[in-house]
Image 1 (tube, rainbow, N blue to C red):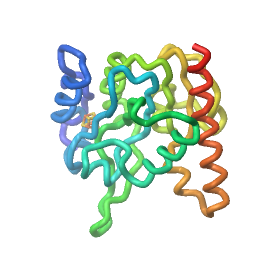
Image 2: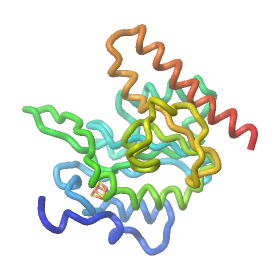
Image 3: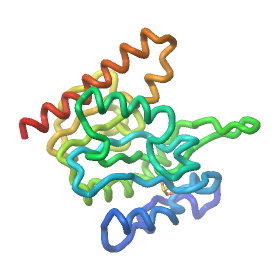
Image 4: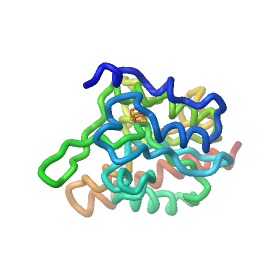
Length: 212
Ligand code: SF4
């Protein structure tokens, strides 16, 4: 790793925070080494006025190539869950804790590699800035990497999924699994069970929003 790659994203943040300015600035981020082998920065997507922000872990292979978050196979599971919970994806702001694809090359395949702690920390300024601009009423933290970035390393998604959490991050904060974990279930019965549980977790948010 080159010496200049050991910082974080802070020097790359724009002076004026807007989603457009952030997206443009993030395209040139060199805050950690992950930009080098990746195709491009995959920044968050959605309107500033979105009431719900969903945070995943990092772009996958398809997202890296297309430059958009949640367009790969896990995106279909996310869409199913949102639909089952009565949430319109167009009304959400979708982003990831880490904005570049982390992978290992195996022949012609690029295998997803879990981001390391320093990579999550390096990328956190972008996530903080997105939260500051969007100011969502509800924040949904999906998976262990997003939870580590926003809630700390001791938080266990499996123990607290679907709960409303005490947090300054947003008026309503909850955590659930990352939709890609549905795809990793060993059989169809488990996948169905996880799909239902994921939709249940998302429904907690929509019910809480109804009470705001
Ligand atoms: S992963 Fe985040 S901090 Fe690292 S280069 Fe990409 S945008 Fe910058």
